[in-house]
Length: 233
Figure 1 (cartoon, rainbow, N blue to C red):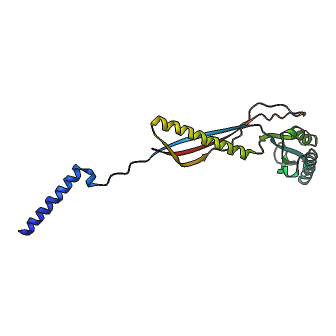
Figure 2 (figure 1 turned 135 degrees about the horizontal axis):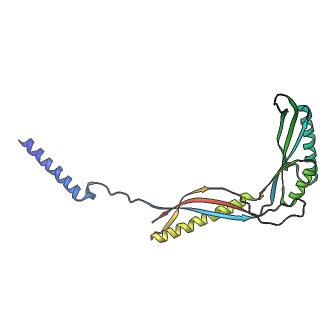
Figure 3 (figure 1 turned 60 degrees about the vertical axis):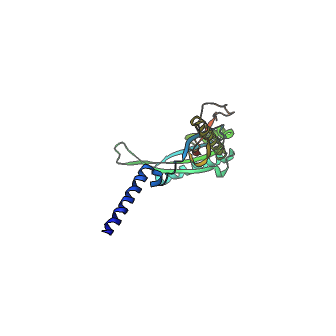
């Protein structure tokens, strides 16, 4: 009898505790941690500059009755172009043979080899000021194919870092505006991620050079972007 009485009292106490927990939740479980507020924005920065470097690819093509003769003629023609480029002021480090090819030429029926065609491509880097004379020198020495120019800046990495700084500043301005509009106080940077890269975009602008082959440098934009997350309260 006493055991039943004790169990009955224990059950009543447990029920009372459960009711108290429902009526006052803070007594029944721990208070949830409030969610942290964050603001994530993207920033964009641009630097506009004038290219000071130009790259070209020159090609020489020859034909001969035998493969060895075709290759020999191509080698001689490429050597002549390279010598002309060096005489025009291009450093050896800025001249590179990028491709050599050899292929048979067949008759109309495609069954008999009648000759061999060989070619070589020579890549050259130079300054904008020398670009026109470099093309003249290569073609004058026998180059029968010209590709380019590909324009760039010699200090592109430094300019890209400048664009990154502008992108971070742009992100900060956006975050401040959002925080102010939402009635929040902007905190410190939590994360920052670089996006994009140096992307040269040529525009039709610039002055012609004093050469028979005018090369117009125009302008280029170097872009950078970042994604930044700030704390806010």
